[in-house]
Length: 102
Image 1 (cartoon, one colour):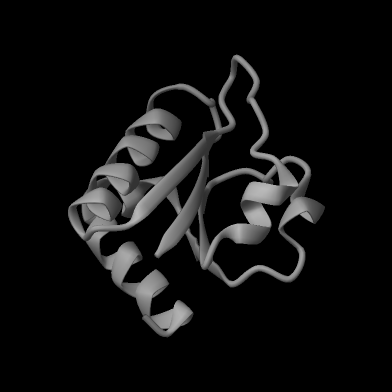
Image 2 (cartoon, one colour):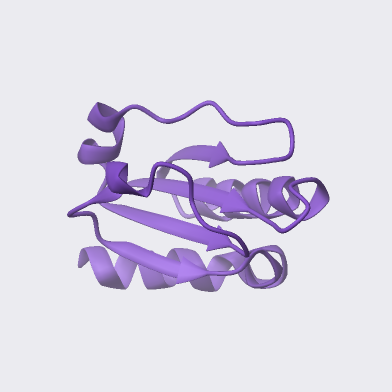
């Protein structure tokens, strides 16, 4: 299964990247293809619409708004916050699997 994760926090520093790392590790451990976009204080490199549309599900772990949110129109989305992603990324992957029906 292909999962995209987008993470962002209020300051755009530590929790953004800690959440991204935790989700990526949990997803790979479960055997999924992972693509992660961090929207931090230093900006972000957007995932292309083509890659987004090829994903089975998207995980948002954010405390602030996701930039260019319209890229994700029509996607199955698991919504969370960075704190949850850092502490229990495995549960977010399980929610993504359930939502995608896999």
